[in-house]
Image (cartoon, rainbow, N blue to C red; front, side, top):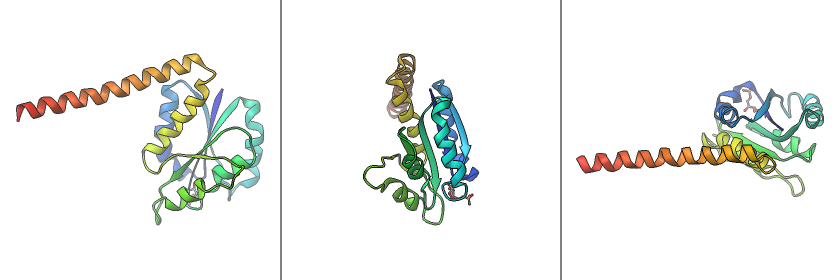
Length: 166
Ligand code: RP5
């Protein structure tokens, strides 16, 4: 099972690095492509149509500005689609957030938040979907969450120690 990551422009890639990194950490196979709903519409639709045959099970679509990538992909597939709005100037991503999230009824897109957390959560949300039918991945997700909790508790312990010293 694979995740397909689409971005409207290569200028979106730096924002997506945490998403790619988390998928790698969780040992989830992925494809990543620069394909635009506006600039390469025919190639995008062709890619979406052929993706299931390559074992793609979830799409993650990142776009900024008038972000229609996730919506157009969702209009051409029955697989789940996660949208990542990119926080470009001059509107700081509110444009992309609203374009992605305000889908008409009948064409679902799950949209993550703006900023650094969004791409990471997109990876984790895709992982949770795939984990429903992959017990080994479900286990890796539990371990990953435990590591995350441990890090916070270590930071809390460090803070408590510092406060005791002061
Ligand atoms: C969107 O337009 C892309 O997703 C990108 O966020 C934005 C700007 O694209 P470039 O002009 O940097 O190629 O389609």
